[in-house]
Length: 86
Image (cartoon, rainbow, N blue to C red; front, side, top):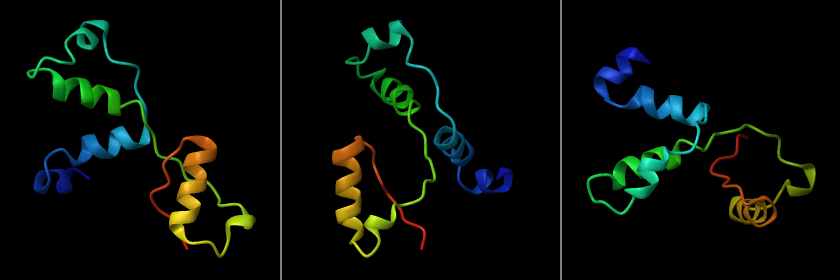
């Protein structure tokens, strides 16, 4: 990952943020979220609260289109499905 980060700056940070979550942004940052100088930082901290999980798809979903499964997952759990391993 270190060598990939040399070719693609920020790669390690991206992967790290996807496999672990962090706490909410500091209150001072919450107050500055509309400030153009801090908007990106607020969005970054807000995005750090999310994680990626690998879970099995229930058998009742087998044979359905990806878009149908993703829609059901979002409606039922308010989660975002972005890939299926076949």
